[in-house]
Length: 359
Image 1 (cartoon, helix red, strand yellow):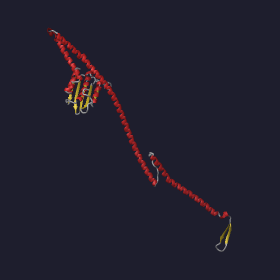
Image 2: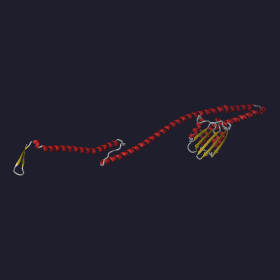
Image 3: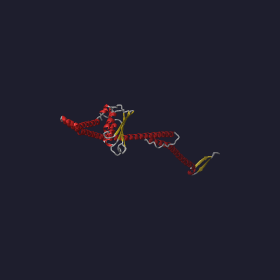
Image 4: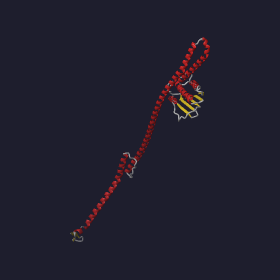
């Protein structure tokens, strides 16, 4: 390669002859270095661009994922996006929203649990009430059957007493009167003993008839009131059974509703019957009191008593409880073997009585 270079000091030129690779070595090295620096600059620029992009895009992806979780109802995981720009502000807003949704969700779950618990409790109470009603219905049916049977047995007893005792007594009285009618005047003096026997027979028959009448429906209850009727019944049954008794009353002399009087009378009547028939008592006390809007009747005896947990309640006691319940009252029984029995009836003086007068 030939290179011509003019000389500045005169009109001459210098001619140099070199190989091309030696003459172009410097420009070639400069070009290679320039290409290397450009490549390095490009790679650095791409790296900076990638880092900058990831710095902006990554938080955005996290926010997008967090927003999608919140939209799906998953509010337990916190939003961990740390930034000082608008993305950080948006992340803080989403975190506040997540915390509020979580709090609302917890409160809603609590209310749902409480409501579910209330519904379960109501369902349990409803089941218990339904079972109780079914049990009461079965008891009522059983009691009704026993009451009907007891009524039929009572009718048979009354019919038997009328036929066997009063009927026979009236037949004997009729036959004795016929013999007296057929007697001649001179025989009348010798018939005084027979007249006396007929008189005693008539008296006893009248007493039996009165007892049956009082047991069925005492006239004293309608005519005189509750206390005299109970006192009369106690005289007939406790007196004949050899039981000393005392009837006490406190503000109970006023007339009550007829249906209520019937309920009290029938309960006390059954209690007196139990004392006379089963208690083997020597003393009994009957207390009747009216206190405000409540009437209390108590029958106590010093008989043999019984254990209520062992002895099954009979039809009479079940009927007493049913009468008290239908009248809106309560019957309590206290008894202990060898220490007598106490029956207490408590009734409200206001409200409807769910019984007929002659129930």
